[in-house]
Structures are given as structure tokens and as C-alpha cells.
Length: 151
Image 1: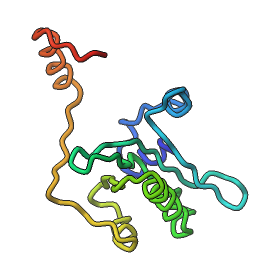
Image 2: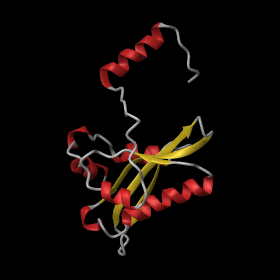
Image 3: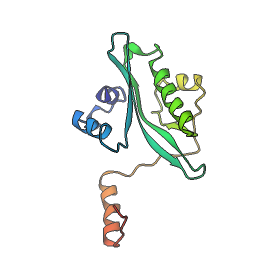
Image 4: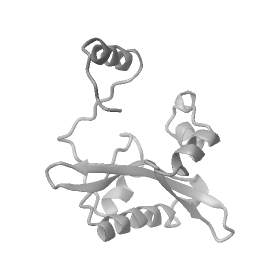
């Protein structure tokens, strides 16, 4: 379904995830990625949520960052997406986390759904990403400066 999501987001050529990579990330002894799968009445997968922990230095507690939420087109409007988000909200409440965060591509029609459950768009925070050659170039600066991170 991750590849279906990439297709939906008009970027299938950017998705290189393999089953082995996902299995390794989710089912290791100390996972940093967590997931939930929504199934229909026939126990067929219809959606998923992949998430990891973040941390608010101001609040002093963890939160959940939802990396991907996807519901297959035939299952949209059935409550599968709401249930996946409700499950993550429940984890937040039970563990004392104060936030459930995610980003959405700007043209996604799910904006109305998110608003209907009380989610607020945050426009004051601008996402940034460092990848590819720029990431490697910056990493080289740590090596040449003799920086040690302990890992």
C-alpha cells in the first residue's frame, strides 16, 4: 500500500521501499517505526498508518508523528481513516503524549476530513528537508571538523 500511496501522491518513481525494508523497520527488537493496518469485514487490508515518536522540548513529552496515512479508494468514507487516527489519538492519551502531528500534500482532498475531526492546519511552521548531495556535503563537514556524535 505504500506504493499505492506514492502513486496517489503522483510520485511513484520516488518510492523505493521494499517489503524487506518495511519488515525490518517494524519488527526489530527496538523499532523506531510503528504501524497499524485497517482491515475490512473480510479481513482484507484497506488502509495503514505508519508513525514514529517525536519529542517536544517545550512540553517535555513525546508525541506521535504520523508519517503516512493511506486508505484505499474503495474504502474511503467507511471510517477506516478515522479509526486509524483514533487509534493513534488513543495511544497519545494513554501514554500522556500531548500531540499527534502530520503533514499533508496541499492538494489532498482529505483536508475536509481532517478539519471535521478537529485537526488544525499549522501554517506558522515551514517544513524543511535536507537530502541527496546537500545531505552528504553537510555530513562531510562533521567528519572534517572532527565532530563525534557518539553513535
